[in-house]
Image 1 (spheres, rainbow, N blue to C red):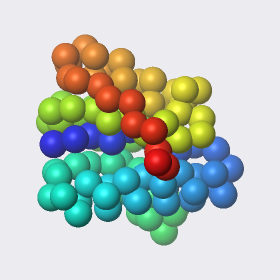
Image 2 (image 1 turned 90 degrees about the horizontal axis):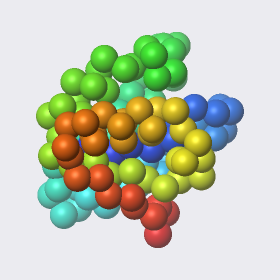
Image 3 (image 1 turned 30 degrees about the horizontal axis):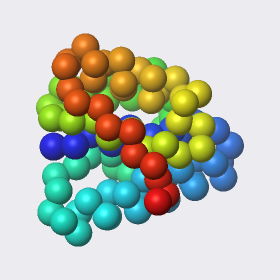
Length: 108
């Protein structure tokens, strides 16, 4: 299973655009029947519709649990990926778990 890390936190518009890019990447993988998980794609609509926090601290335990189940980490190089605290956290954890990390230029 591929865990997909991507930047998220920002303005409301930035978060929605980042969600749409991550969603498109998940769809691309799903077309080829690739098992994948994106916390942004999975939880953005939940957080928006139920006024849940959207910061790393709130979602940390969930992200850790899911990343521990992954076989590889894909990092979407969306605008802001290299400054993202969440992406850095996921990359550091993946390295500690000895997962392969691939940087993905997205959108293509």
